[in-house]
Length: 556
Image 1: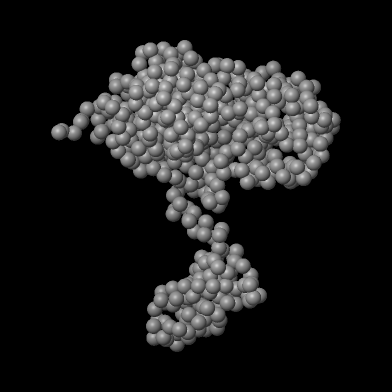
Image 2: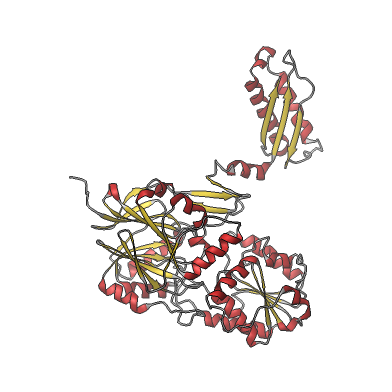
């Protein structure tokens, strides 16, 4: 049977499908050997304790780099870091036109300037409801609600059908910042025929509907009204609707507001320029903090995920010059805990509690709501769009499988499970995974970007567990030791259980290793180097139970 050579519509995620964050989706149209491509979102994720020193985790996009001559453009759905945060770093590898909303564009430029430069990316601005073309793809931005201004879903149309790429969304009947999710347009798309729904799975494990943002505003007001002293509220800096809810609650309770945190101020500046902060009292300066009675103040601050350099962590450590909390004050966590951050957040909470400060979380009062759809909202999206194919994205395996079950139970004819690197053909014919392409993670480490080997991540991880030992061995003309080797141990235990110094034990092992090699064979300096390395590691392991990295220099 001859291989099909006609045009195909394919979907290939390189990030965000099988994990939370780092969203990077590819759509391809055309015959297999000449597809034209569209990128939707260019996101990052954040390092955990297994990546010491790493600043950001980026998707490995080498697959599309190798086909960049047929890449027609990038569309960004909204300004969350996991959807646009890698753009400044990865765009120079692609250098194609980029489309985004005014808020996303403003935040990108503010970020570029704040972070010390970066490429000046030519941006095409669009707004919800508008249509534009990217190569063979017709793209329509459809308004949805989410925890940031101007989020959109995309209706991507080709001669083989229309795909609805939801990105992050929910159905909020009373958002703090509009517009509402455009049910009418989704229904129109469904009536016209939707080939595939590529849908957010983040909250697919939760039943019911998400509460509205205005209900969260009422919950915040109740906590602020009841607080006898200052109130500090930490939230995601990009959640402009939440920042506005907090500021309105403070105003209604007769309190003034202070912003703490560079990223928070950057977002509020952009939001103010676009009118999202209209009608609110001005935020006060840090210098005025000490002159305002405790009961008249609300602080909005960064640090909801336990970041050690963020404003909340500094408050918990009492390290700020002009701002401090006192016993009886209240700290509200108006946020969810991103998996992996639990320990850091708990440490900050304990520091605050030790100061006599009360902690309020979303299990104490309605002070946070997710920006993602629960199961009842997912079912409504299926009803509106009536897709032939359902593909869960944006989540770990548990989220993807959970949404797949909801899709199947809701009557979607074809439900496909894909993961990063899968290429699934959406049309023509039944949905089918037809290829597996390279994918993975790159790391931003200071000014450089590379894989774990190029950035030395594996060695750095080993260093963080067992330290490093450097040994310098000098041989004389007769290939005898010219004095004792020099040894320097960093991050290694000082003494063993019997009180013997580990450096002395490792030094003895190094000398013994050289002495054990017949003098004639010591002319092979590489042999001497490896023998000393093995002996030093073995002696450390015997005394300590751990094997440090060992570097040996042998000179003659």
